[in-house]
Image (cartoon, rainbow, N blue to C red; front, side, top):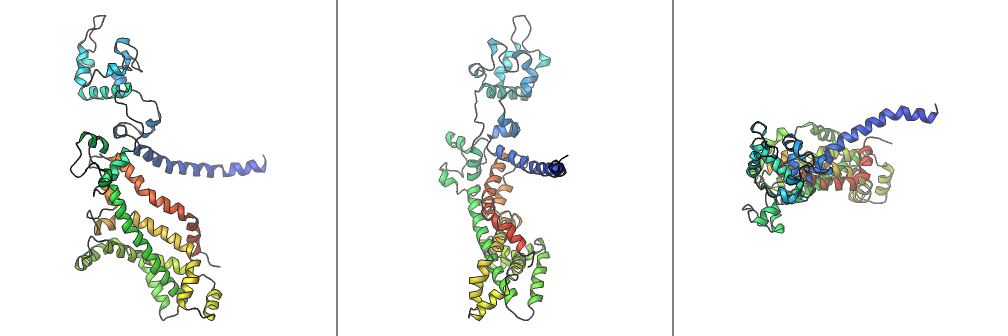
Length: 395
């Protein structure tokens, strides 16, 4: 056996394991993505993988009708279920049930009493026949779920259909640009999330960079003790501070305000941010800063002209961490903003009804919420690994 074959066989289990893990992660995501583009009726009655197969009759048709009419519905020319004009004659299930008592040419009853479907099965058969014959042809994929999620539609059909019929709810005007501002919609929540996330990401970066420079290149009494105290604050659970800070915000008038959420995220993001930035800035060459000081540079000049430009990998990785943490946060937004200024996580949480309804909107909303984090991650990913490793390895 050649050396190349031995290396291939030795690495084969690892490759199989990696591929299996990738499939396990990607397959559910693919299912959610496909479901987000399917009409609500199809999403509620069939799996996402059926979107790529040829439409066919369902289990009820197969059980009660396929034996005589055939799997394709065209076995009897006088009752061709593949003919849209023939199926269109049966607008309601009672019209289909009326044919059960018909007498066939051989004198037998069309459907004997003990072989007839119940009311629900009959309704399902009619629905299957109408879809099977193309009487109620629906597109396999649609953007309706995304439109409904953006405007906050909560009806039984879709935003476009309700607006066309004039049966929209009172909080919708059917002016799409105007309805994007609906407080129940994802578009409004998307804007609120941006308002929360951008300052709550930038403020920790600024304060952490300043503190990291001070801990690295300024000498003052108790510097290391203070740094150790800040690092130790990372173990404080966020949940145990919610009640006292909420009471403090009520006294200060910061409840349900963006400022309160910015300050909370900044405070809880700073310990790790200072730890990461201090390790990076502290590992920069000492000779570089000493040369700058000998040339008359102040600490502010050394910070802005040397430390910050050289710290871009660490700043970028820290920005990604903080952005994703704030963007995906539900608990802090739920406590300090609630439904007055809903963010994406709060809005998504309210989409699923107690009995599981509305989950087709959940899939569309989930992909709307992950769109910007994915752009941020792929935009800064070249700094990501470099920034993570920067503070871990010295030399």
